[in-house]
Amino acid sequence: MIKDSHNGFHVFCQFYRNETWYYIDARGITTSFDEFIDGVKEFVKGEYSIRPVEQKDINDWEKEFEYNEEAYKFSEAVIKEYSEYYTCNYLRVGTLK
Image (cartoon, rainbow, N blue to C red; front, side):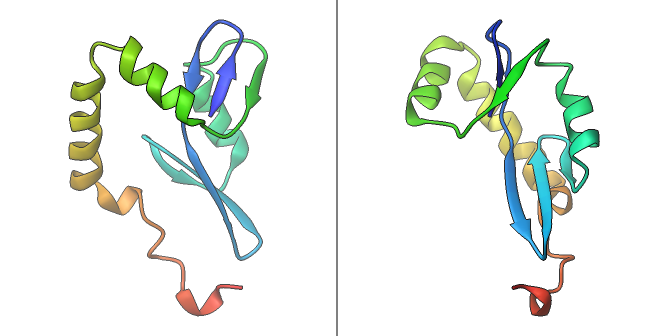
């Protein structure tokens, strides 16, 4: 999770494989942190921190955002339709360390 001091935030996943970091969010997957963070600046302004999502964050989102159920349905539909953008199947399993 990336969070700024103005309650802006952006949630993403990251993982490390074959000596490379991968950043995954609604836009897809990239290995370029600069490319990733440039797109995040639309949601997060000024100084920001990066930290793991906590259960409290999830509870707050589900309480505070009226469109939460709609957002989940939309996210699931997008990921299902464009699943190739959200998987790392193109990485060869044999190269895992």
